[in-house]
Every structure is written in structure tokens, then in C-alpha cells.
Image (cartoon, rainbow, N blue to C red; front, side, top):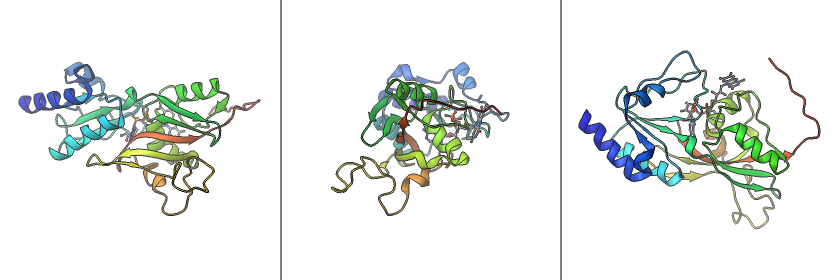
Length: 232
Ligand SMILES: Cc1cc2nc3c(=O)[nH]c(=O)nc-3n(C[C@H](O)[C@H](O)[C@H](O)COP(=O)(O)OP(=O)(O)OC[C@H]3O[C@@H](n4cnc5c(N)ncnc54)[C@H](O)[C@@H]3O)c2cc1C
């Protein structure tokens, strides 16, 4: 098993850099904890990618060698993180993928990497004069990817997610929704409702089972003059 883990560490280090791969007991133990009562199982390796391409290469490697993969965002799940196989799982921590790629005032959308914490995404949007509606989750911990995989789906907020990029279990990268160039009459840059099957919806509320979300385009509104909040 040690040789096996060493091979994983070597390969993953070649993909993301050695600083972003960990297999020491303290780190592995820390990643068994989340906001739930359940606790997870200990992975063999924790890896922290920065790009969609890196996620794709990690997943393709795991697929080839039949190694289970667990994806982790902010760790705010109250349902418990996926279990994997103790000591034989690659845990992908998405929180290094935290960039806002574009705020588009024409299409009223924001495009961001899926590991960004929702509070940071809201803050960046606010600085540009926009608001992103994302209630029903502790925004200082929940990631965009976790929100789409869990909270947004279960809370019925999925209509604001216009398109997303996901890495499928064999490492293939897919982009859902329409974008510039798909239709010359399409005035909105990204539109989930261009007709045809709703491939974006397929991934929302899936708990990460269908793929790893690496980017998303989400609807924004002008920042409201008045905000009303309720606490439960
Ligand atoms: C105090 C509190 C209140 C909450 N209130 C609500 C509520 O009112 N309504 C509600 O619906 N939820 C609520 N939640 C739950 C929380 O918002 C969801 O569980 C959310 O999915 C957690 O996001 P995360 O980034 O922390 O994901 P994690 O906890 O890290 O992961 C959650 C799931 O999403 C998967 N996942 C994470 N990132 C990705 C990704 N990039 N691609 C694919 N899969 C991924 C994981 O594998 C896992 O299955 C609450 C949680 C807390 C702690």
C-alpha cells in the first residue's frame, strides 16, 4: 500500500506541483471532518488543483487505475461527504480554484471557478455593483461547486445557474449551455435555455456523482438598494 500511495503522490505532484499534494496523517485526518455528524473516511492522498485541465488529468489517472475520487468544496455539508474507500481514495480539494473569470454586464452573468467560496464571489460581484442570490447556505464556507451540487439543488435555486463546466468520471471535460457563436441570433452570451436537453440541470443537486464542476456561469442582478434578511 505504501508503494501504491507513493506512486499516487508522484503522479499527482507531476500534475499540480508537489506543494499541492499531501499524504501525511494530520492532513488526511483533517479532511475526514466536515460540518456533518457523520465524518468521512481517510483518503490516501489529498490534492489541490488550480485548473480544469489539472482536474481532468487527475480524474483520468484515477479512472485508469480504478482509484475512487472524492470531491470536496467548503466542507459545509450537513449530509456528510462521500465515503470513498478508506486509505485508497484521492480527495480533490477544490478551494484553490477560486478565481472570478468574468463579470459580464451585458448578459448579467458572472463566470467563476467552482472552488470559490460563495461569500468571496458575492463580495467581488458587489464591488462591481452586482448581486448574486445565494441564500440557504453558510456563505463564508460553502463553495460554488458545493452549492450547485447540494444546496442550490435541494433549495430549488438552480434556475440562476446558466451553464457549467464539468469533468466526467473518465476525465472528459464538458461545457453545458450555449455561449457566443452557438447561434448568431442569440443576444445573451450564456443561456441555459437554448432548447434541447437541460444538460446543466443534470449536474445540479447531483452531490457530485455525475462529474466534478470546475467552472460555472451564474445570473447576477444590479445590487439592490434595500436588502431584507430573515434568520431562522
Ligand atoms: C449552518 C449550515 C446551514 C445550512 N443550510 C442549508 C440550507 O438551508 N439548505 C441547503 O440546501 N443546504 C444547507 N446547508 C448545507 C450546505 O449548504 C450544502 O451541503 C453545500 O452543498 C455545501 O457546500 P460545500 O462547498 O461546503 O461542499 P462540501 O461539503 O465540500 O461537499 C458537498 C457535496 O458536494 C460535492 N462537491 C463539492 N464541490 C464539488 C464540485 N466542485 N463538483 C462536484 N461536486 C462537488 C461533494 O463531493 C459533496 O458530495 C447548510 C450547511 C450548514 C453548515
